[in-house]
Image: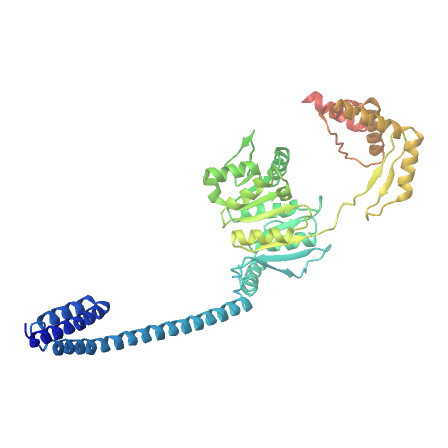
Length: 465
């Protein structure tokens, strides 16, 4: 082995070490570059210029690695800039959202207001006792539109004769109601008992007969339906009756029935309903009744919108609210005519059990008379009636009711006879049980309410019947 050979071996060993070092570094950079370094070093081992080729390969790898690092740095800078811009945009969005939320809190969305019916007061020009007149309109009709159409209708009313004339002068609330009916509007009349509400119902029936239309008169009970049937038949003739028990002349232009019968007809879709022009609801304040009020409510809802209404009611506190409901439900005007005047004065008397005489405790003006009340109590205490009344009440509650006592029936007999002698008849006696009613009736049958001439006339009619 020559020295040159040894030197060549040393050079080969050094080149091999350098190649291994460069290959190990290249493995860290990537498998592909390491493979290329190993292949290039293995090719350069056989000659003395191996070290030079190894250095050249390292130089080429370093040249390739520099742009890769620059590219990675650029990508990192771009990602950082994108993240920073996204953060900035996120902050801006959050700030904008915060501002919008603050603005929403400062200016919340106003709820959409639902259109509601409206009412206005009308000046009463009719002469008579005081009454108020309000007109309720649906949300779809303005006051200006109604007043324009009402003026035209009023001219037509004045140009034709009335449907019915009366022997007496109509009161203010009656005249206002008749005018509203002639305009073709629905009317709610709220007045006390015996104020004359039936006259308004009769005018609506007369209008229907004049226009060749059909009308229905409803009442809450059968007894009242029978009474109205007789009264209206005498007045108009062509009147029918429909109750749960009796059906008379069902094809008449005017039908008297209970409210339950009308509701049943509406449920069945009767052909009669299509021919109706007016419906009169007598005693419509029954709608406030917890058990039966639903009958009136359902009936009013089911009646077609082209039908007009006449509501006769006692004085109610929410008359305008009821009229607004009708106007919005049926899309038509509804007049509310209210009077608080009592044409028949109302007086309250007391009679002491076992005492004598009547004591006026509340007069027609509603004034309480303390002196009369004390006299009634004195008569009651002097006759021992107070203790007897308390004892009788306790015994009645203990037995769960009972018939009329002889003392109570005797007092009723004496009271009725006294009222007849003073000219306070006709008289209605209310009792709260059937046994009491029968006992009072048998006791009062002994009283003769006719004079001698009237009694002889009754006997003659009875014998010739």
